[in-house]
Image 1 (cartoon, rainbow, N blue to C red):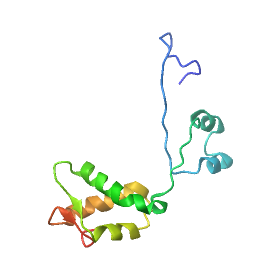
Image 2 (cartoon, helix red, strand yellow):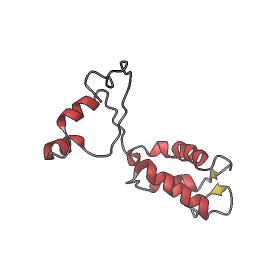
Image 3 (spheres, rainbow, N blue to C red):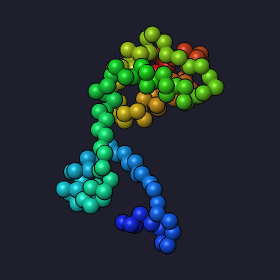
Image 4 (cartoon, one colour):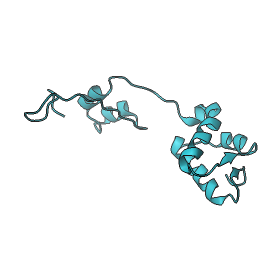
Length: 119
């Protein structure tokens, strides 16, 4: 990206850059492993998202939405026993870990209803 926001000899560009990371960029800047000038260019509107382990009440809704995305043609649903079980997991991998757990449960289950055993 050029500072003038132009490609060589072409019309002005209109763009937005959305970035996400699980890394501590402030710490990385201190260690010299992330450029400070780049940080201040991309850090225009920071959105800090707490980890999934701190948003336990969101897990049922996120899990249901994720099931629909994982296999839109099938009508997977969570049993009453699955939801409390999903809330007990630590989710160090955040939403990716929840996705993988649900994906594995879909493979392991013989029915469309995913229970705590499949999870």
